[in-house]
Length: 639
Ligand SMILES: Cc1ncc(C[n+]2csc(CCOP(=O)(O)OP(=O)(O)O)c2C)c(N)n1
Image (tube, rainbow, N blue to C red; front, side, top):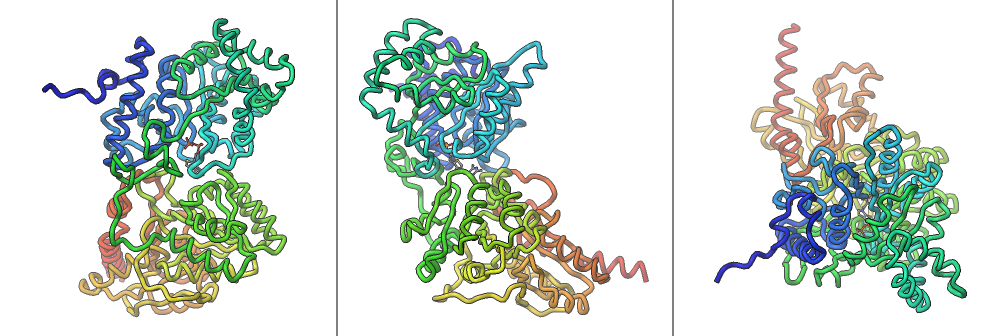
C-alpha cells in the first residue's frame, strides 16, 4: 500500500508565496498539516508548543493576506511563532529548534528576513511595530505593519505606552490581540475577565450574529457599520464596550472574532489592510488548539521537554536531584509557615519560579502580578513600607526590566525587599534572550543591596532564610536553572553572616575565588589541578556584595595569583568587584577573571555551552594551569 503523506499541503509549501493562491479548503488542510507536523517534531525534541498550536490559522491568514516579507509582522515574545517559522522557509530546520547551532526558539532578525524583530521578553511588539510604522513616513515604497500580541503580554505596561503613542501618532498599524485567556498560567488580565463576561452575554451573541450576517455582505464597510449599529442598538450598550478601551486610545476596534475561523480571519485582514490609522483586531483562540492533551492541560503545554505524543506527558528525567526552583519554592513555604508577613510575588511565572508551591499552601501570601516585572518590584516596595517582607521571585533575565525600580523605589529607600533570582547564568535552550548573564553586574553596583549566590541547594535554603531575616534593605540571591546538586538537606535553617565567605580547601599556589554554580565546578577541577602540581586555595565567596574584605586582605598577603569564577558576564561582575577592591588597596596581585565573555551567547544545552566557553571543570583546569604558567613565565622574564 502506498504510504499516505501526513502533511499533504504543507509538503508543497516552503514560503508564504506558496500559499497565496491556495483555496480556503487547501489552507484549512494546511492548518491541519502544520499542527500534525508541530506535534510530530516537538514531541521528539521539546520546545514551546501550546502558543503555536493556537496561532496556526492566524499565521496562515497573515501570510496569505499580507505581502510578507515586504509587509512586516512583529510577533510578541516569539514563543508562539513556530507556525511562522514553518511557513517561512524553516520547516526542516524546526527539527533543530533550540539545539546547539539549530534555529532559535524565538524570533531572530539574522535568522530570517521574515523575522522582523527579535524577541523573547514579552510586551515589546506594539512599540517595535509602531517604530516601523512611523518609519514608513520616510519611505516611498510603504510596507504594512502588523503586531501580534497575546493577552498575557498585554499585562505588560509597555503595551499600553505603545498603544497610547499609536493613537497620538495616528500610525498605520494593525495590532492583533491574540486572546486565549492564558499567559503561561491562567492569565491575570483584568480586561480579559471583562471580555469574557461580555462574550458570554446572551444578548451579545444574539446581536453579534445578526450584525455579522448583515454586515458580512457589505465588504469593507461592514465592520464599521457593525460598530455603528452596535452603538445604536437599544439596551445592548455592552456590545460596543469591548473595544472602548482601545478606541479611547485611538484604535479602531474589530472583534472579538474566532481566531480559528480561517475564512473569517482572511476576510477581516483583507478588509482592514488598507485602512488608515491604528487598528486593533481582537481574536479569541485556544492555547494548545487541536491537540487534546494540550487542550486539557492546565498550562496548555506552553513549553515542554520531549513528550509522549499520545498522552502529552513529558518523559521523566529519573534520578535527577530536585531543581533549584523546587528547593526554593519549598523553602519559602516553610518560611511563610512561621512568618506570615513574608509574601511571594511573581510576574506570571508561578511554576517557573516555584511560587506555585506557595500559592497552593498559602494563597493569601501569593501574588501573580502579570508579566509586569517593573510593577512587581515597586509593588513589593510598597508592601515593604508597611512592614511586610516581599520576596520577588523572578528570572534573572526578566528582572533586567526593573532596573530603575530596584534603584529608585527599593534601594534608595533602603526597603527590605528580597529578590530571588532563578535561571541565573546560562539557561540553555532558550538562548541569549533568557540567559541570566548580567544580574551580578547590574545588581552589584546598587548601593545598600546585598547580593549572594549559593554553592548548592542547602546553601540556597539558608540564604533565603538569611535574606528574610535581614531587615536593613534590599537583598538578593541568584541560583541556576535546572537540577541542584543533590546534597543532603538538614531540617530548619541557619542564618549566614552577611559578607562572610567560606574557605573550602587550603593551598598556596593560587587562590580560586568562586561564586554560585562555579563553586561545584572548581571543586570538580581541584583533583586534576593538584595532580598537575597546582595547589589551589578554594573559596566559596558566597557574597558578591559586600565582599568578604577581611578574607581578601588575608588572601592578598598570601597569594600572588588570584582567579575569580562566576557564571555571569566578566564585565562588571564578581571578578570586577574583586579586581576593583585589589586596585583600591594597591595589592600587587595577578588576577584572572573566569566567567561569561562579553558577547551574547547562543542557545545549546547548559553543559554544551559551559564546555564551549571553557567554564566547565576541564576548561577551568586549562585556564588555571595556563594562568599559573604564564605568570611564572612572566616573572622569570622580569627577573
Ligand atoms: C518580560 C517577560 N516576562 C516573562 C516572560 C515569560 N513568558 C513567556 S511567554 C509568557 C506568557 C505569554 O502569554 P501570552 O502573551 O498570552 O501568549 P500565549 O502563550 O498565551 O500565546 C510568559 C509569562 C517573558 N517572556 N518576558
